[in-house]
Image (cartoon, rainbow, N blue to C red; front, side, top):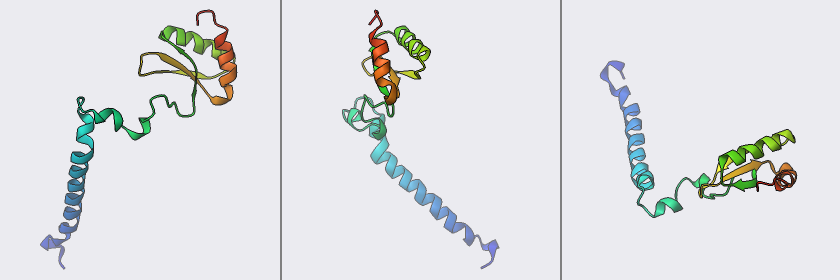
Length: 117
């Protein structure tokens, strides 16, 4: 078959069209309803990896406070003790100070000694 006939373009064009059709079908069936804020299923079927609201992966909450400044003070206290910590905003507006599981007991002991908590 001669390349000047244009038949060699049919295969890639069919592949692009099929990918486009599958993308439109997935978008219509799966993503459009998640984007609507008034849909009651949005809370249930958001991103699957964020299904558990209190799931912080490998980290554990050492303290939960109302103010971000207090969370920063706790992080500095833990850093002075040699414990790496970060913070995360919870859905209820509170701030969780997170540490690795091997340091959770020591971190909670240090945080429990704070008079502000």
